[in-house]
Structures are given as C-alpha cells and as structure tokens.
Length: 147
Image 1 (cartoon, rainbow, N blue to C red):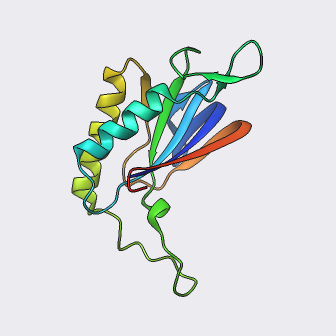
Image 2: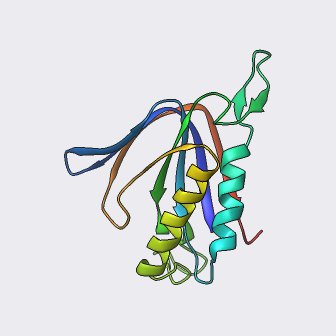
C-alpha cells in the first residue's frame, strides 16, 4: 500500500460539480492499494497517518500529529500511485489491486483511522474526482508498506 501524504490548509473532493468531501487543516492522503496488500498494510498506514508529526509546534518544529492540531484527514483512492514507467512512457498499472478488494481495504483503512480518533472524510472510490486543495508548506511524504 502506498500513501502520498500532503499537509494542507484545506481540501475538497468534487465529483462533477458536487463537493463530496471537504476538510480544513489536515492531511490530504492519496492511497494506492497494491496486489497482495492485506489488512495489516492498512493497519500500518493508519497508525502512521494518525501519529505522523508533520505539523509545526510553537517553535516551528514539526512535532505535532493531525489529531494534536484538531485536523482531519481526506482519503482519496488513487491507483495511479502504482503506475510504473520503467518501460515506455505509458504507465503500467498491473500492480494495482482489483477494484472490489481495493475498495474493501480502502474502507478498512478509513475505519482504522476513525478508531485512532481521527476525523476522516473520503473521496468516492473509483470515481473521476476533481480535488481542490491548498498545500501547507508544501509538505509531502510517501508511506510505502513494501519498503
């Protein structure tokens, strides 16, 4: 499982012209679910997302988690994180998990984050989404359960 974590001032997911999910300060997280990923991968990512210290304290040091600042997480499914361009120029997505299983793991990740006490919003799995966000920093971190 791969997660691209971005610290944001705000983020909104649109499907068509309709805003489906929105957060204020927090983390916008693009999630790619790989073939063979399991509930343990979701648990690892959930723990990291809930505890990762990427928000600044009063001294300007990144030492606070999303929960400590009262922030939220916006999860967006993004199989394109798994695209490989080693051969040619068109991405190869063969490492992406099949959609039904990926959707279950994506929902499981969301549930685990909620159990960690984090407010979670989600994009629509499998939908074409427009994402409007304002990066804070920018701060962008990759979490990869295979590394």
